[in-house]
Length: 408
Image (cartoon, rainbow, N blue to C red):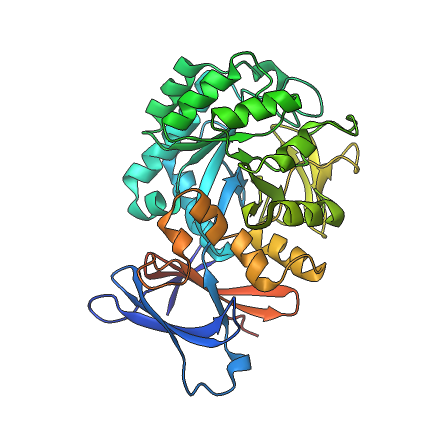
């Protein structure tokens, strides 16, 4: 039933000639047994699985996870040049084992030439491989139009930070084949509002992040079309005014959807709780995973932060100072587990924040979730209290990952 490819179980998608097959599991939102029928890449129906005995032994079934911010995975980095299309294809397939059916490879602050090259390589990978094209929902460019200030800039290279430049952005967009769908910037730069308005009019989602903008600059950015906050609470100054400040202002803007990293290291539970209460259905999880995610614990040399340490507990910090985080090394499932463990959300809410909400926000068809007519992007998983184990990932109606059973 599986083929071993780099340690990943790839399902053969066995079914009828028209690609029809069924999966039975407990619905992630209700806990009730359902039968999900798939045909021609779409969910044909979701019906109660009548007469199912021992329902508690069934796997859970939920929409595929959608990650708006992934810098790399399992040693493959979208920001270390040069790299080829095969790296993007490999990373996209590897992410299926994490339940990710759609994602936005993220290219961070770098030289104009490097950003152009990186988005171009991602575009070529999508052009060459249809499943990669379907898995990569768009490209997220994080920077270089961010704050130059320490703290707010995070780990982004100061030498590459610059003011928004529409002609330059258009050049990157052409190189990407129109695939740049998210741009993180700081609206503290002069004429930011005009730039944001052009991005918004072109269909690009503008997200506020790595900023030291004033509240008025944030309000102006929202009026111009900014719609999201990038990993709110991180990429921020260690010290700032009690009020007003750019975190409170983003929380107060009803038009802004908020992304948070819920790995248990980047934000205290109290901050996550406030974000969820304030934003409600507009709160979303992102991994912001760096390429060391999925790698064994140990010390690594990186191109951004020098020597870093990935602990057995999953925390990534600089080797010189364990108190300084060196990025995120965990995927969305880890964030879901953290919310369950800390009582910050139930399974339905935590899973929605990681799947249908970001998909719906970005206008993806996967935002329909587990409903008839939606893309057949879903996962089966087992749950033991706050622990989740992925069993199978279905993408476009094909079983693309099945967990291999360990043999004695």
